[in-house]
Image (cartoon, rainbow, N blue to C red):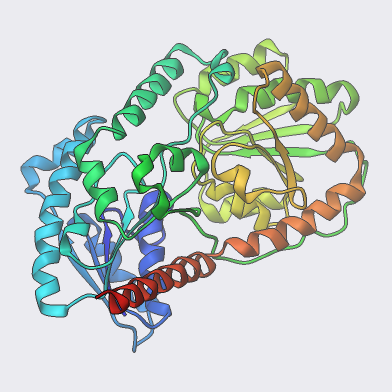
Amino acid sequence: MKILISAYACEPQAGSEPGVGWNWAKQLSAMGHDVWVLTRQNNQNNIESALHQFSEDSQIHFEYVDLPPFLRAWKKGRQLIHLYYFVWQMLAFFKAKALHRQVTFDTVHHVTFVSARMPSLMGLLGIPFILGPIAGGEHAPWVLRKSYPFAGWIADFARDLSNFWVRFDPWMHLTFATAQRIYVTSSQTYDLVPRQYQSKCSIQLAIGYEGDYIEKPPIQGDEQDIKLLFVGQLRYLKGVHFALYAFLALLQTCPNARFTIVGSGPEEMWLKNIASELSLDHQIDWVPWVERTALNEIYERHDVLVFPSLHDSGGMVVLEAMAQGLPVVCLDLGGPGIIVDETSGRVIQTQGISEEQVIQYLEDAFCELAKNNKIRQQLCRGAVQRVQAFTWRHLVEKIYGQSQLAASDTMQKEALSP
């Protein structure tokens, strides 16, 4: 197929949104499709220096679109980035329209931004339009916001209002209406899509894993010398404050346990103050953000990944840790709640429970894994097996298999119609 990808963010050797755009292009090209990618001009140098990753017979083409330099300051502001992105979408549409006259695409696919709040105009090309996977409907239950810092309350309330507006936003209605298939990352984002378009929706993560798999060797030493690990931005929504209270309780029965927290962010001092108030200074290791190669070494030295995020649509760190043989303790919210199951970790149910209960259930999971090497070893093996269902290739093949079936059904209906 001749596929046009709209990837505002697309960059090799990058995480988050740019990594999503790059991996879609890479995987579709590897599957033998003729792939054309629309992305931003500022990605050009990094993309062209990485084109050697594609085989010589690959049909991969990058086209660059951007706003004039004097308008690029918009994207540095939290609100103006939305305006910048929308104007970029308009320019990208006219570029796509011109390309379509030359190439005659079979499908157009919007992959980044991975947001249910930001529109795409690609459906106006008049060819099958795949949207997503998109995210953004994930939200923390109100009862679990009680201990937020004030800035967290404001940020989540603003997010709630933004999500409420999606149901009335004419540009998002146009985006949903023109899509043949819509992929969303969670049931919460599914609920965000207006009801008349939900029949087009399927739930699918927006991220995949690509790398090595390492099974941990048999666990040695004292069962209670467990080493917990958190990796990510230090923000209120990551739920690290819950993990700190649960870790304090774990120390009552497993005094040799350790907790390493890797990352930085706006709530770093807030979290460090909580740790100090709980007298955890000597049991916690705070590590600034590190490169991925160093992160792999950190995974190797730890036993369990703790990732109690309250609204994380993906959770790339969860896939990476599982591939390194670490079981994961998380909440049943967002992407981590989909990735992790009973064979690869412990998922804390949040429906109708309080913050105190979440902390208790986290403590129970920590204690179980600290005191039972047999269960922990089983979960280590299960984590490596489970993550293999979430590779980039598996994700891309699943979506394009479903999309081709949908296109075939449409053609059959048109052929049978009078």
